[in-house]
Amino acid sequence: MDFGTPMSDAGSLRVGNVTTLRGWPSARSSAQPTTSTQDREWDLLLLCTAGFILTAVGRVHELFPSLNVVRPAIVTGLLSILLFALDDQSARRLKWIAGGPMTWMLALAGCAVLSIPGALVPGHSFDYVLDEFAKTLVMAIVLAGAIRGAGDVERIIRVLFWGVVLYSVVVLMRFDVTSGGDWRLGHLYYYDANDFATVSVASIPLGVYLARRTHSWRRVLSVLALIVLSITIVRSGSRGGFLALVSTGVFIVLSVRAISFGRRLAAVAIVGVVLFVVASERYWTQMGTILSKTDYNQTEETGRLQIWQRGVGYVLTHPILGVGVDNFGAAEGMLAPFAGRQQYGVGVKWNAPHNTFLQVAAEMGLPALAFFIAMIVSAFRVLAPQRRPRGLPPPPVPPALKQALRGSIIGFVVGSMFLSLAYVEVLYILVALAIAVRKLERRARHVAATPVAVL
Image 1 (tube, rainbow, N blue to C red):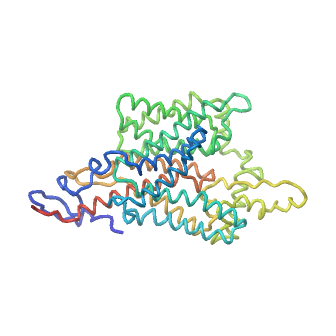
Image 2: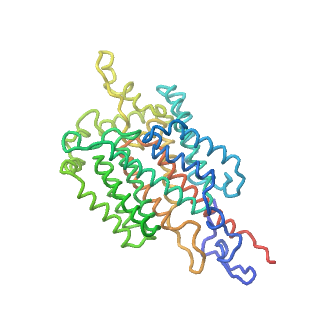
Image 3: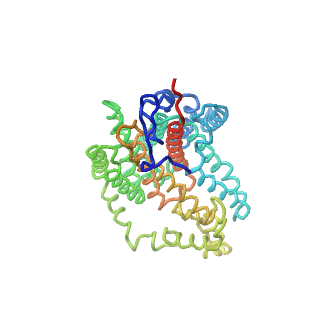
């Protein structure tokens, strides 16, 4: 795939009285798509995709059950698909999102389908792929295709960020955390506390970007939102969430150079202060067990280390197509060394894999793991900062926005190392946004390479 002419091969091109470089848009090129002309306002398709994100990630219909009267997830999802299919705008053609992360995402979808016939419980895998995973993948394609410009990307990350913040606020208000036995949040709406800690961490870089972009009271709201997310992460008591938070903080400080060092250091400092002020002694005791050899994760058969070892065994016995989508628990109940106890009336726990990459390998096979990693790495590379010669117009997507999305991917990946998040919507939304960024840059290069008529 051609990503543009390298600067070493760029020649000069005179159009009228304007000199520019081949492969790069001219500041005066009237054909250059800009956010001011393409995505100046919300439209119905973008509103529907935003509504779907609020239900899929923010779970607003569970926070406020009265919304279920209109079935918001189904309505917004179906409307998004229909409107995208009927839209004839050039920026929303499927050709622009082909290749890159999209290729690997579609390959992963193929592995999911192929895993069904040989699954340990084929009916469950079929239902899960049809009812859950297919919906997530289709909506990721629609979201990537619906983006018209950088303004749309920013609108979507606002919806994603504030949806997570709203969920956090409601959870903190409705679920009590005491200093006694219930020192941490338990099972919440849809998520458990560990899962939501990772979702919260993945949202923090987006909040840092939005705090930089806004002014006055909106910036204050963004900072308050970061504080709320930090409190939620502490209240979750998640060790994986803590490691993800530290990794994301380091990435923001060292790598998000499109935001001034002072501002990104201040944002990370705010989160750090909240962490130390809100966290209880029990929380720090919990964090101190991460490397403990006496922790249940290393000593008990239901601990992560033992589950991971058995999971590697499932991969070795089912290396090509896996045990079936969402069948890791079934493997624990049917293939694990202790599964035979059930015939004697002894209960066996059907454990989750507690590692997203192991989950993909065990449930869909090693080829699927390769596609899954390639999808994430490709999305991360798409969002890498690029050098542009001086005197050229700004890139179609601000570098700070791309780096914020990179930070979100970092936070998700680190947290997912300890959780089963292979099919959750937030990952595919982030990948879809990376695909959209790639689309905008491809279109900008295409327009730059198109001859401009001289009147």
